[in-house]
Length: 245
Image (tube, rainbow, N blue to C red):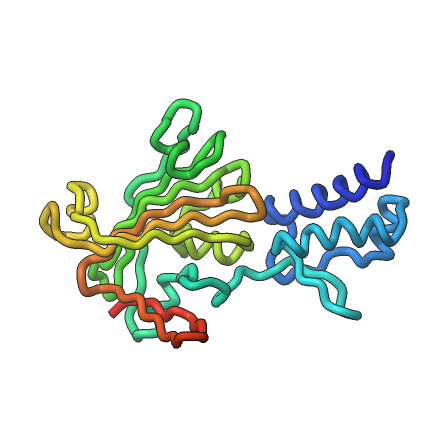
C-alpha cells in the first residue's frame, strides 16, 4: 500500500473512533511507536496522519506527553458554544430540560431539514424547552447528523440536554452563530408560556468537525432571559460572555 494511502487510513481509523465516541475528549491515543508497529509503517507516515488530525482540531499533541483527543473549545471564537445547564447553575438556579419531541428523519425526504443541517442522511430531530427554577427560558429545535454522531441515537436526554451531551462527547472544530430577533411561533409560544408572536432572542448555530456537519440548533429565548455581552477595544479581541439574565 502506498505511503499516502496508509497515512490516510491511519487518520480515518482514528477519526472514526473519535466520531463514534469510542475515544472521548481527553483520552490518549497510541504513541507514534505503537502506531508504527500496528500499521507496519514509518514515523513519517504516522506523523502525517496525526498532524492532519491535529490541524482538524481532533487531537492535541504535546511533547513527551503524546497525543490525546481534543476537548471541546471553550473560548476560541467570537461567540462561544454555551452550555445552558452550567450557565443556569452559575446563577444558583435549578436547571431542567423537558424533551417535547424526538424523531428520526432523513434529509432525502425532507428538504427543509437538509437545508438547515447541510448534510445528507439520517438526522435526529429534537424539540425541547430549557428551564431555570422551573420557568421556561428557551425553546430549542435541534438536528444532529447520525452519520457524524451515531451514539446520540440511543440517548434519552433524561439527565442532560442534547447540547450538553454533544459538548461532552464530540469535539467541534468550527461553528457559526446567527443572532436576531423573532416572534414566537405557536409551538414555541406554548412551550415558553408566552403569546404567539411574543418577542424572542433567536440564536441559530451550526457546528462542524473538520468538514463534517455535527448539528444545527435554533434556540428562542424569552425576552429578558438571556444576554450576550462582548468587551473589546480597537486592537483587542475579547471573549463574549453569555448567559441567562
